[in-house]
Image 1: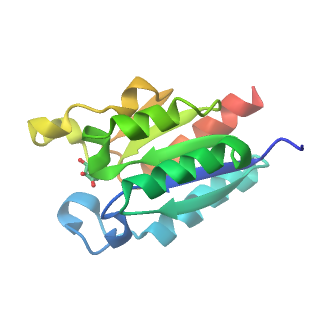
Image 2 (image 1 turned 30 degrees about the horizontal axis):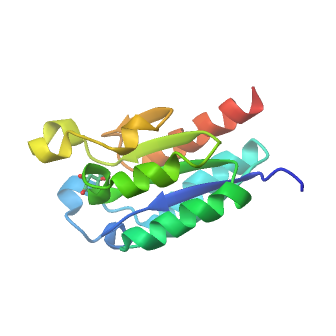
Length: 148
Ligand code: DQA
């Protein structure tokens, strides 16, 4: 099988509302903007992206399982599941490529329950508080890890 050149950009609950939801925290860019920005970075480096969003934990886990065969790297903003989901951590632990964790807001400046991340136990890097630019930077980092 030809090795995949596709980076999965996975988004958890409520991120479908990006651009409308609490813009004072998350800004006015949408997931379509995120996809465009990540695709631009990836294309430049010879990769492509697939952006996916679900409000359902099991669907995100199924998509991580799919990534095992179909993706070379994962950028994940698991939303609130970041702080609660051992099951998403376990799924990420079955994935062999680089994983970047991304949060639009600076979770460390917010409520204490947002300070802990299960995903960070697996992530190769964490981008926090860089707005939607964090996704493109995370994509760039995956490209450089895989091109090294
Ligand atoms: C978030 C931070 C989480 O605490 C929150 O539940 C989200 C978004 C972020 O991108 O800043 O849904 O992951």
